[in-house]
Image (cartoon, rainbow, N blue to C red; front, side):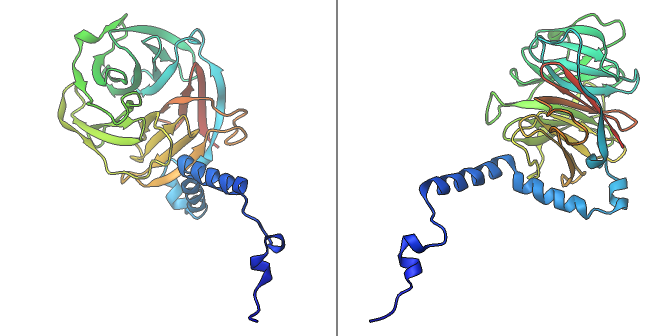
Length: 305
C-alpha cells in the first residue's frame, strides 16, 4: 500500500488549523488595511527612513514637526464646528470657517478669536482659501458652490448674493462632496479637494474673483486616506498638505502628486498628548508653522523641532 503523509490528512496532527473565526479575523484585518491604507502608510514610512538630508531640506518634512499648542479650545465656538483654516499674510492672522453656524472667524496665531463675520445664504461652508487683497474663496459642500468674497477690516457681514459664485458640479457621493480648497499662487490656480472618494481638482485664476476655463480633475492615486478634509499649499516648496479627519493623517505631496512625508495625528506622536479627534482644517504660515482645527473648536499648532 502506498504510504500517505498523515500530518496532512489528519486534522488533529496539523501544526495550525484555519478555523472560520481565524479566517474571518484575517479577512477583517486585510479589509481594514486596505480601507485605512496601513500598507501604503507603512511603505511611505520606510521611504522616509532612506530620504537624504538634502531631500528633506527642500520639503516641508512633517516628521520634524512637534506640537506647541495642543488642543486649545477656541473660546465661544463650542457649538459652531470649525471646518477649515487659511493664513492671511497681510494681517498675519488666520481665517476659519464654521460649518454648522455659518460664519468666518478671524483668529490670532495663538488661537484667540479676534472677530466673527456672519455668512448669510451659505448652507454648509466647509473650505476656504485666502488669495490676497481681501479675496477669500469659500466652498459650500451642501450647495456645491464656491463663492469669491471680499473681506475688509470693516466687514461686518457677508451675503452670498453679493459675490461671484461657481458651480462645482455633482459628486459621486453628494453628501461627501467638496471640502478642501487652497490658492496656488505660483501656478495661478485654486486646488479643490473632494471628500470621498478623495480626489483633487484645479481651477485656473489670475488671483481675482474671476475663474478661467473649467474645473479639471488631477490624475492622482496617492491620497492614502479614507477621506479628504482640507488642503493647503506651501509656497516655498510648492508642496501640498492634505488632511484627513478619518485617517488622523496629514500628508505631504510634491508638485507631481507624489507622497513625500506624513504625520499621524495620534496620541504620543509628534508630541500630541491625545489623538486629534476630528481634524477638519489646516493652514501653514510664512514661517512654516502648521495650524490645525478640529471639530468642534480645538486649535493646534506645530513647529519644526
